Amino acid sequence: LMTCSAVSIEKETLISHRPHTFLRETDGLDDGSVRSRFQRMIMEVQDSVCGALEAVDGAGKFKEDAWTRPGGGGGISRVLQDGDVFEKAGVNISVVYGVMPPEAYRAAKANVTDQKSGPVPFFAAGISSVLHPKNPFAPTLHFNYRYFETDAPKDAPGAPRQWWFGGGTDLTPSYIFEEDVKHFHSHRDERRGLGGIFFDDLNDYDQEMLLSFATECANSVVPAYIPIVEKRKNTPFTESHKAWQQLRRGRYIEFNLVYDRGTTFGLKTGGRIESILVSLPLTARWEYDHKPEEGSEEWKLLDACMNPNEWI
Amino acid sequence: LMTCSAVSIEKETLISHRPHTFLRETDGLDDGSVRSRFQRMIMEVQDSVCGALEAVDGAGKFKEDAWTRPGGGGGISRVLQDGDVFEKAGVNISVVYGVMPPEAYRAAKANVTDQKSGPVPFFAAGISSVLHPKNPFAPTLHFNYRYFETDAPKDAPGAPRQWWFGGGTDLTPSYIFEEDVKHFHSHRDERRGLGGIFFDDLNDYDQEMLLSFATECANSVVPAYIPIVEKRKNTPFTESHKAWQQLRRGRYIEFNLVYDRGTTFGLKTGGRIESILVSLPLTARWEYDHKPEEGSEEWKLLDACMNPNEWI
Image 1 (tube, each protein chain N blue to C red):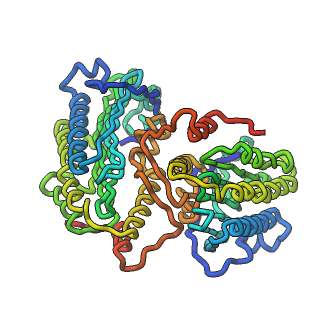
Image 2 (cartoon, chains in turn red, blue; image 1 turned 90 degrees about the horizontal axis):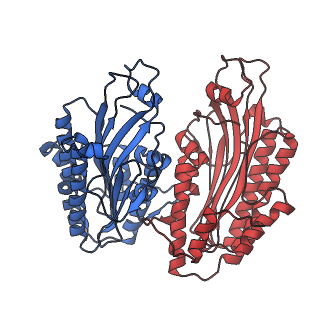
């Protein structure tokens, strides 16, 4: 629906205890609002995902940082680093109140004819996570689910408030096990919307229905991913398997820092840097012009990245 | 002077032997042109820098890849990887013929009143290098020197051809040795323009004088940097020193992939990816919210990065 070219976000303050809500008082009182129900959902998903990850890791524990911003909003970052199973696992939630420049709003809404409308306040809440296991045969997982609202512009009476949902879950293996990818995608039939799925700007259905859809997608992360990690976390591997994983980590960073809209947007508009960069692996490697031998397992992965499969 | 929002660059073809010149025939015949003299200069600097690096390394050898583009232009990438002294050292030259959209040209030239001017062909040549030594006490070096020309627009008779020089050399240590930084900067007095220097859009002096200036800066890289590496390459270090270097490598990558104009511009407009990413270190590390102990050597480096010194 819309891309913001610039957004003002205030500087965050670390706080010692996480609050019950990051919503502004006027928002928070209405506990039945989509804002408040979406916030509760991402807090619950953060708890359940972190619990499941600590259980599968056995040793690593999440460290939590909470922060707020002066005008409302804030977030909770949780990071498990150098565990037995996970090299690095970050699970963040954030609630942002910002202001979108009028050009961005006009560009997005073809039917807005009032050229005098001012900056448009917006609200965004989301959960975002990247999980990097140590074992090269256990895949990296990324997911994020977000809800976005713009206020009705004050100087354009009658102009509608806008809202939309976005998000997705995707698997990034260093080696392909067809059965794992099938397990991951099989939820697509049983539980709508899981597995290599992305949606954005979703607002053309009933809002209740889309809130349920986003909730179901977020709740599917644990059953889709944890069994794969359980299965692969103790698979024996060689130094050469590990070196390949490190090269794939490097490629992941390239995509993340150069192309990922969420990462670059966050870094360039004043988001909390340490929370954003939690998505990076603990270690990575770059070799000039590395090419795996044709037909090898490493080559098969690259081939699958370049020539997408229908997995089920 | 100008920022290009989009540039068309053709796909490159690897070639088995490096050519004598990457200039188009019409350019190459005029051997006294600034284009051709700048190209010769960067080829010579590539040779002398790579020679000096192989000598100080003792074991590592540069691998060379050359490529051309269908409409003229091309480049030579040289990479030394996993040597005795250098983890990764890339020294690239490139010659690019491209086309700049008219908005970019108009934005750059305040006095151009003809709103009908079409796309503006440009020529750019440059040398670019990042050197990552293994020893955590030996600093990373980056330098690049470039020359840029736009053709006179065909449909705007009388509009002048534009040209400018840009470039710089900078040192990125993981630990500060004041004497090393002073040595590096001392060339600033003896040899104009070396050490933590950057210039861009330089065209307000005589073109001959600026070509000499760029040449002198490029020729100062070896005497400014090699003695520091010689001095530090065998300094004993602990695992903890190495871990800090790896974290600084991570920060280097963050700056390079997210903020560096050359890198992001190259990646997003069709530059040769493997040549651009040669600037990344072989290995790096990211820890969530890492903070060195106040007063430690690691803390002193961060402090100097945040509160710039006058070194001489």
